[in-house]
Length: 75
Image (cartoon, rainbow, N blue to C red; front, top):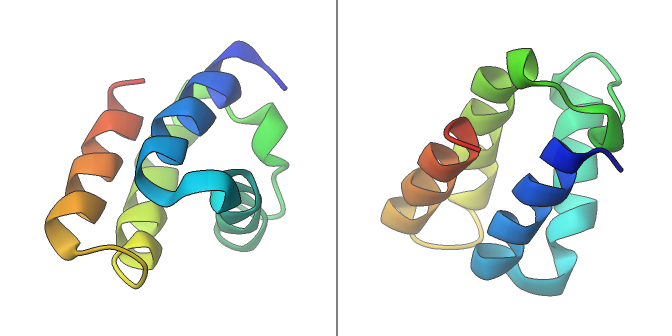
């Protein structure tokens, strides 16, 4: 896992808990053309944040999902 992916994972764990890694892997694979989450790059962050906001909104309230997406964009 690269440094950026590790940082995003740590942020996401705060919001989603232990399922965060699998959650991020699915978001990257399904919405970023099969990209492995561990290979994420800065250029991928806007699209990842968009899908995290949508999908996390199903798991936590929308304000927390938006907050998570903002933190991912700033990672």
